[in-house]
Image (cartoon, rainbow, N blue to C red):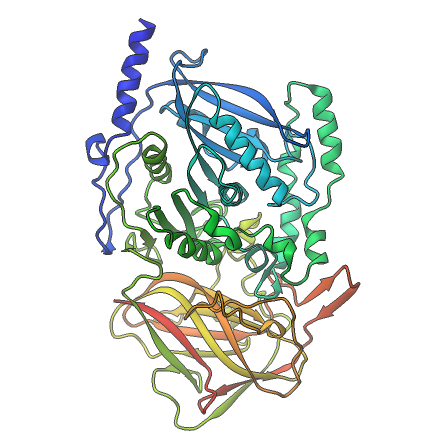
Length: 594
């Protein structure tokens, strides 16, 4: 009887791994364009029960890492015989706590072995987080763990990695080590560039996130003394408490250097040889470099790379972290990952999908589908700045626009999407509250709906009375009633203006951040400001607005600290002047779809 139940379960699991149409889900499609159809229905019902056990795996330096392995089971008490594909996550958030690593029973009851491991220095694992946080040591751990579990007797020889945030970043870093058995990864809301999207935003320290990071990064992982060997657990906890907080490391490295490059997947993305499903959100604080990671990975010939971007924050849509963010028509995230892993870990026959599927904001329930990012159908429109207007016609005469920097600027929206990466909720406010900050330009009212799809770039020609200043750009949707809804933002510390020509693209400038150069007060300079990518529909009758300010507290720090040099530098109040028209006209280029 037991054998017959198991055989029936295996038969049903085979159906789960079949083409989407044969399992009752929507047919796969590669059609580009705009669609309102949710393509991923929930996975079929479970066919196994599950059973879990705690194990330890010892690394080459003697540090033991704690893992929980959840297996398919015919009866909930014994492991099912046979070999199964493995999905694996490495987490600092406590493998039995917050985790962000997928639900073990949900995978195991559908024919996968689910493995989650506490990062060294957290949970039940030994070691500490000193010099860790995506370090080369942690990447080597990832490789060793994939090869350990991929070689177990219950493994079919194929391992995939899943999970979000830190758990997604470790997927990239592990995959760059090219471990045996690794067959696919599905990183969610994971940055590619630690300096530009974690510590700073183009040279401006990401203050609100960094402060919260101290509490959420190591804290949850300190909970959980569940190793089989209690003495080893106590030793691990003692070692964890002796680790150096990552914020200290940040302040020892105020500019981009080897510390960040060793921990940023973007620099070694070419070493990733397995298929990748990138999962992101337009209101996630890591979306910019995640899309750059997708672009690099998509260049690999013959290796599938897919991108899915929903409208959500790092913590999702809706309460408690995004109570005002509505998102009808979302695809089933688990079904998407399940299909991808079934294809590459269990040889399932799965129809083709569009390479890029990006939700159209605000709550439209529609997606742009494309074969590349940005979509080939997106074309840049250049706007000139002219006396409070965004105009496609160059001003006949040059002009200047001057504003006094306001240290209180930014307080009109302190709970933004970057804090949501850590702990604070996303609560966007009407940008009319910031009407007195900086200087503002608006387009004429649109005569038809228009979709922005891609990155936005401001080419700013400006001067300051200070030796350094910050450029904060906020792009908004202005409704007929005057309501100003934030679309996206861009940042640049003026001293960090030097471009990295090897990484910069049209619409998406990248800066070196290695040798900041002070401004000569009163001298005009050209600044290329990256405004974070988006897909957003402006309705007929609405206006596109661009606002330039120089402070954004508490989100961004109005200064910097260098612990190594023992210096503190503040961005002091100043008078900033922007050119309008002339040979050095300030402009913004916006990618409109279609």
